[in-house]
Image (cartoon, rainbow, N blue to C red):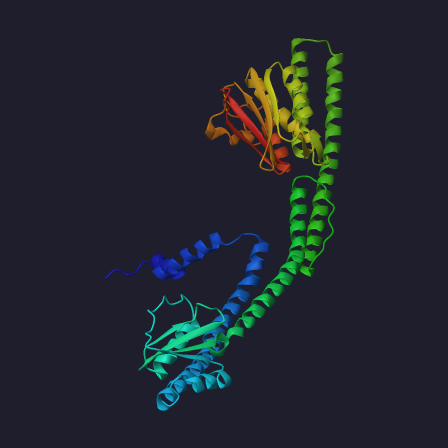
Length: 464
């Protein structure tokens, strides 16, 4: 007999096989979770409302089952006993042939209207009401106490009920008030219960909204900070929410200090490097111009461009504040810049609101990097902007060779060069990386698609 595999035994101990009931429960709980609201406010309302509704349902069921139905049965039994007594008196004392005395006693002592319909028959049974405790309770009591053919009407006149019982010489008709056989005031309890619940829920919802507002405010401030917008924020609400707000403010200060220190360091580095490059240029300018000196001059110029690209990518233009910017003017300036590069701009279209809150300098650099890339590889460029679903989109199309779909994400990586990539030819390889970094700093992104012009379409999406 072979020994069991230790690895298999260990795996079974760590991940025991799940039963079909457990898998069914997981599927059901997942389906319920998918249908439940995702917001904190809606979930908090469910936490408050669900227990109240459950409690009220249990109380209402218990009241209907134990109190209302029991009281109705007892009242119906009392009325039926009075009717049975009247029938016994009528049959036991035949000297009251017209039942005048019996009718007087029924009216004065029992609050019942009595008529003897001699020679009459019971009417055909009518449709029973869909839901009536009175009809059911009264019918059961008449069958139990009187045990004669009968006909009742609990629906016709809302405040009266009519009972007809077969007697040897005809039909005895009794009319009683509904309140004598039915607990008619029991609904007041339900009205008070539902009304008080609605008032309590209204107060709870009002206080809950006041508690949710600081959380929503904190989320909006965090989102705005992620988009580079400066928003005034003062922690409010419950103690835990205030703690989260103060933690966010402290985190924001740390990030701003780190960014300020990085910017200061980069400015110092760029100043020192530019000083050295300037010395190189002056030295090369003083030397006799030969082919080797011209090559060195081009190398220094290329080094200057690469340095500016590196610094721009590392700095990210984060210090610039976000302000409402006229997109129509910005796109027209972008058209002028593209035409200076030697490309033909076929159209500049703008649909929707012309003003969007962005960092104007950084956003212009983002669009220029994409447009210059399109002008380098295509002859015709089209620029369009539109407002769509709380976001502003700018699309830049060209008729160049395009980029294969499998390589479109790779070109956004810093310093990555593909054989047919559209990263700055002869540049630093950071053009698209800087553009995407700026777009994501605004809370948006850049996507690449096939263009209707036959080349590539770069779409910048930022929150409006």
